[in-house]
Amino acid sequence: MEMRQVLCKELENLLKEDERVIVMDADLASANGTLALRDKFKDRALDVGISEQNMASMAAGMSAYGMKPFICTFTAFATRRICDQIAISMSYAKQNVKIIGTDAGVSSQLNGGTHMSTEDIGVLRSIPDVTIVEVVDEVQLEQAIKTLANHEGVVYLRMVRKDAPKVFEDDYKFNLYKADTLKEGKDVTIFATGLMVSEALKASEKLKEEGIEAEVINIHTIKPIDRESIIKSAKKTGAVVTCENHNIIGGLYSAVSEVLCDELPTPVKAVGIRDHFGEVGKLDFLMDKFNMTYETIVEKSKEVIKMKK
Image (cartoon, rainbow, N blue to C red; front, top):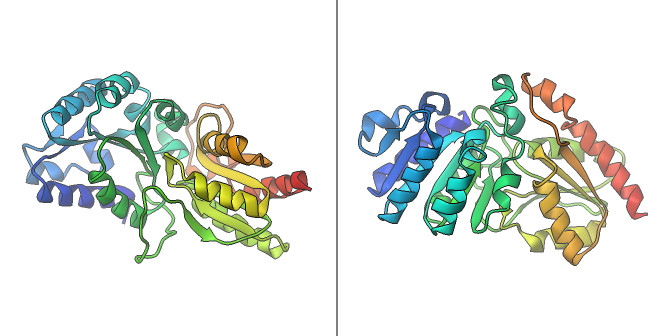
């Protein structure tokens, strides 16, 4: 099942369970897979048109009256276009709004640079009281939606819109505040998020062939970040690589480095987009162009291991 199909299914469940839930789209319900909600919930599944800032303001107002709004659009429009509304109307005003951003990073593919948000985490991470979550696959998305619906406050959920590599089994349990240790290791820690988790797991297998034991940890909640897991793993391995489908400025690399600089100085290497706009291309091409493949993770892992020696 595509990620957008899971999103629609879980939003439909929320709409059925709670009459306070509202779902709003900005003319992208067809692309995001939520169009079918309008037939079943005519008064609570709304299209506001191509006016994301208005949608954000509406959501904040609805929250002030006790509603539980979910707004859904591409990551570029869910963050940088509505940044002021998120900061003032939502967060500063202490409202309860869920922002769902789809087509994260290079997964935007043929929509190109204007629609390819590589700075969205960095933009929102600097706003107080905004929780930031990036899901890996359909299993994690399904559980995250349920958890976040009951979480009070402003949440930004970042996700791939179409297919995502399966990482978690059906018995997986999502914990908003706890990172997922996917593989134990002693030589290097690979912290990954979203689309890059499957690449990190591939890299760990390649490293294993060379006698290097990599610990792979999925950090799904980037703010507030799981400091305890970061420090514990870095203390064990003494070397860290971060992997993200995002600009390394302001994203996972920055967040992990801040924790380590503050509490446990450790060599860190970053895999991600290096201060560059996105462009048109298929996913494999873009991941290769921006050095976001498992081969780069293997290379950076070896480099950072040498640094600790």
